[in-house]
Amino acid sequence: MGELPCGGADGHDEVQPSIDKPAALRASHLLREFTDVGLKILADLAAQKRVGRGIFAFKAGEASDALSFVAKGTLRLVPREGGDPLGEVSAGDTVGGMSLLVEGEHVLSAVAATDVELLQISRDVFEGMKKTHPRTALKLTLALAQDLAERLREARGPLREFLVWQISRRQAEGR
Image 1 (cartoon, rainbow, N blue to C red):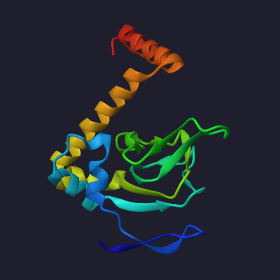
Image 2 (image 1 turned 90 degrees about the vertical axis):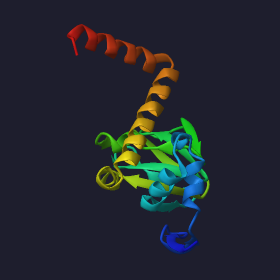
Image 3 (image 1 turned 45 degrees about the vertical axis):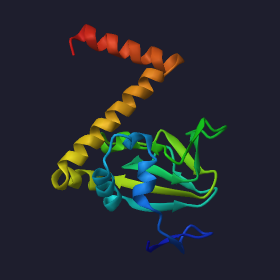
């Protein structure tokens, strides 16, 4: 494997060995239905990003423009206002999936609890993939939709009540 410039103590210019992208993507729950060919396509297109411990991978309010696969390490998810973490994502998890489908901003911040390696598919890369690898792009879109459906099904409390209200409102409006 090659080497990449990655963030040093100041977040820049340290050289680290490249991770095994196909193996890291294979570990992702989101890609569980992907073939080795599909994983290789995504691995070839994914950019690697290193985030040092204590550094923000992204902040709430920033544009969300990439699906990030956590290849190594742990990110803590914290509310926009700060405070206690709401949860953590680690190797095999993803963040930012909806950014490939709709424009928007991060609603949470993610700070590295440990050194983190991310593999990212940007919206621009995804748009190109639709032309160069349409089957892989479609399969990724379907995987994102299934992941969202599973998360919504598992939602509890006020979020679930809001979603039920929104669905019933749309049905009443005939949408």
